[in-house]
Figure 1 (spheres, rainbow, N blue to C red):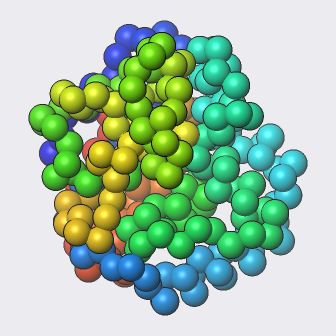
Figure 2: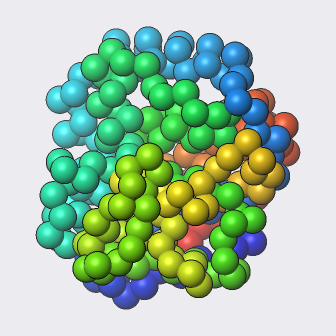
Figure 3: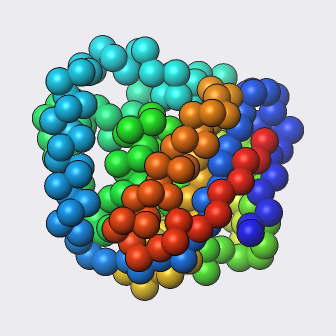
Amino acid sequence: MMNILVSEDIRTVCPKFVGVALEAHIINTPYSAPLWEEIKAFQTDYCRKHTTESIKEMPPIQATRSVYKRRGKDPSRYRPSSEALVRRMLRGLDLYQIDTAVDLINLASIAYGYSIGGFDAGKIVGDTLVLGIGREGEAYEGIGKGPLNIAGLPVYRDSQGGIGTPTSDHERTKLTLSTTHLLALVNGYDGNREQVLACAEYMQGLLKKYAGSDGGKIRLFE
């Protein structure tokens, strides 16, 4: 499995950080009707139980926002992806339909409130990722966002540069229909080991049902 290290920069702003890595071989598809039936049912139930005010009571989202603030980043301008997804759902809007791998990761992100990085492991350069903090002027192309100012944002870097932040992953290592080796990283800035593991296990179940996978392997890192 990929080696994942947490830098002192992260430990300083969030001593209780805990993450989970899920690596799995998958068969990605453009669209899964059964998955979207599950997403629609989940959305209906979720919107009955929550409002946009509920976001203030979601520890995974609030903990990520707090890390942004400690590093001088405005979390309302650079929203964590989990928060952006939750807000979209609670506004009554359908989730973006991308492909099966991305769609099921988005479902897991909403279900547990964690920002989840989804990467094509075959495009990662080297065998180690380091979670650090973005620097001023650091080049980064967010998926569908173009150049993104990641200064102050938590960022995973391979030997070539940044590949993932809680706000957006990088175009270079994004999931595509040709992806066969998935790496998903659940970011627990709230320090809740039980919940980050539950989120990864939930993703495993979705991969088995919808992505032709045996669910792969998961492990904690902190």
